[in-house]
Image (cartoon, rainbow, N blue to C red; front, top):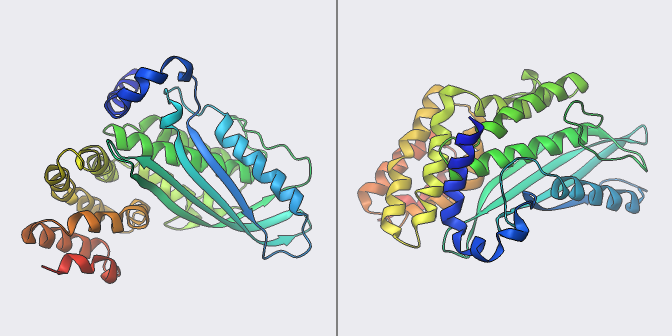
Length: 312
């Protein structure tokens, strides 16, 4: 199975990056997957040691950028651009912190200088312990830190979305790892309900379950169509790329029919909906009407975002 996914992902990436690989292949075979930047906001906390959190941000950046997370080949130009912002809200017992984590990641569009957003996500319920000189290391067999577990979880979430965008269901291997991370973290940190079914529809648990749910594979199929058969064709043939994106919106509708509260639909809304509307507003009246009918069902509260599709 692994070889089949390697070949699919290589096929998707090879077309996108052939000209770059010609010049850069040999020295880049072992490049890591991410080009990430981590920032930590402590404005809500009083009397904290800023050096402590600058050090923590550096450790988290090294964790993401300096590890190999898959067996896939990424050239430096292919590394996933990612921003991680940790907003600390409170501190208890001196070394126990609560906060929010904001994750954004981007993917290049073929033949364009444009970078499309893969994900924009806000994790509202993060708690962890951290003291000076604590190490931030990933042990695949057990988690010692809830912060490390959460960061690693989002690494594999981003990898799954990235791989799904280059090959049909190309993120199967990394999305399987998501479930393993949730299971290990749930055992290590039982009080953090985001690792369990108690966490609600947008928890880490819920996202991992949705990506592993066969009933929601239609979302992942559309994710591939949207990126590889849509965005990546826009420079070469804008009409064809736009038509592919709009014609397959029915795949999102299928996901909504089986799981109307799917967190995957929320991920799409946060990261892709405005971009989709920008693409669709130049379509024919009939295409726009069809797209609007579907999107109104999926996102009934997004009236303002969808308003350009109502104009002739």
